[in-house]
Length: 166
Image (cartoon, rainbow, N blue to C red; front, side, top):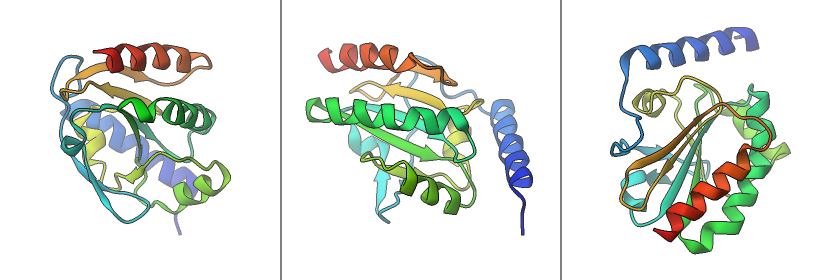
């Protein structure tokens, strides 16, 4: 049985490897396409969301700022989804059990996907938890945020509004 510390160190190692080997996720570049299985068992493919503003939030159950941010992200999703906005919560843990338990305590309405092989995390050059990427209607990365501090959701809201108006 793996300990939480072992799992934490393993995730950190994967994220550090992603920083070393990937340079895809830069502002203005085309967002790397991916297909991931959601908690409902269905696959979601990023390219099928073209025409919508997409926020991709990479998170882990062991990440305290991720847990703090999730209800705020859900509020943004509820507020803007009828205007052509969607939010994808991408869990980066190899075993999704802890994430599924967390979602019982912090329920969210937006789609939650599981990147258990960290392939998407690598493609997006994820180096901090949480990390958030905003993709415009044409599929280009427009904003990247590494980490979370209270109040950042106001900046998210401004950026979402800007992209929805375009």
